[in-house]
Amino acid sequence: MLTDPFMQRALVAALLVGVTAPVVGTYLVQRRLSLLGDGIGHVALTGVALGWLVGAGMGLTPNDALAVPGAVVAAVVGSVLIEVVRRRGRTSGDLALAIMFYGGIAGGVLLIGIAGGSSGNLMQYLFGSISTVSDGDLWLTVVLSLVVLAIGVGLRHALFAVSHDEEFAIASGLPVWALNIVVAVVSALTVTVAMRVVGLLLVSALMIVPVAVAQQVTHAFGRTMLTACVVGVVVCVTGLSITYWYNVSPGATIVVLAIAVYAVVSLVAPLLTRRRPAHDPHPDLPDDVELPAAATERALAAAKECR
View 1 (cartoon, one colour):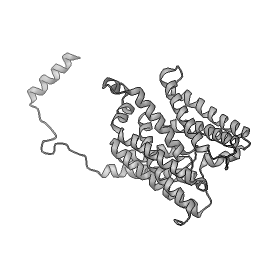
View 2 (tube, one colour):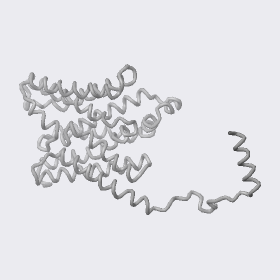
View 3 (spheres, rainbow, N blue to C red):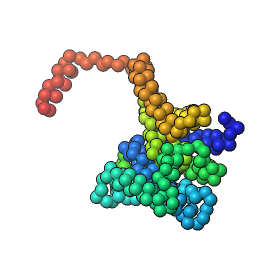
């Protein structure tokens, strides 16, 4: 398997996707925007078709040579637009996402027809295909992944503050508007990074499900991000290896594995929590404090007067 050039490129891409998607997904879960990646994926489909149309017009071979760059541009523009609509427009966040869902799919199917292709040509982008990862796509994936990790990990303190409590971030003097745009752009880049391996329709699951698994076993932000990355890498590499031996969709296999891990951890985590002894921050102090009877009566009387 490791001697196959297709698998070598696909495994490197899967490894990068397994790390980058949960990093960005941690912020999206914190902001309660778990479906943002799905909406961006639909818009990226229009970018794929637009790149296909431009490539066909320029006579490039293959016709989809500009599909990934087109998806990057469309995803970034779409993510910024939805952030603008969510913040300044009168449209709510879920309505803006719904418009992106339907507009992205319709635009992709319409443009691919004008470019001389068919909706079937979009299937490899919708559900992923390891045989479509070219050397150029791999280098673009490496560059975009490094950008996502540099921003997602390097700015984690500021991004966490904005994602956790926006009003507190404003009071702290952080550039909230700029940081929200950063989260949107990084989410768009992550979607295009994972497009070749997982597919545009399933990339959101890889951004969210590993984070949901991590939240079952840890509550600290940094540990959640690290655990989610480990889960993402394991399911991506394992799922892609399965597709080498069996003719199944890589994106669907990876997502099903991630959901299976979530189901198992959800069943096991409560049992481990029950067996874990309660943490006492001050073991040298007694847990119960006995108050004198007179003091207790005065405290009860004062409480009644307050009522």
